[in-house]
Image (cartoon, rainbow, N blue to C red; front, side):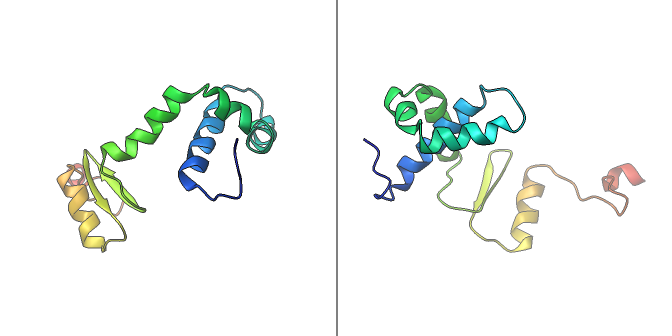
Amino acid sequence: MFDLSTRDLARYGLLYLACGTWADTLSGDGAIHDALFKAYFVDARNVIADRRFKDAVDADWAKPRQFGVTGVPTFVAEGRGVVGAQPYEMLVQLMEAAGARPRGDGGESQSDSS
């Protein structure tokens, strides 16, 4: 059912999200890494075939589309976004449009230092 030779990135992304969501239901410290490895390389067929986490995966898959994400990096603040590598000034404009204020040397906002 799942052919690892196809390089179908969207399908791999769904597999990753499904396995990650499943792993969130587990407990234990280092066990999560073993569980993810096993889930990805052994149990992945079951996770995908059963579509156990379909609703959660579909919701996660939809989030970037809601913000208009078409590539990486993408920066989103207060519903506004900038896609792709951008000059510093563009990121400053994004933050200002989102209501952020510059910080002073001590880490406090400039309005707090008066």
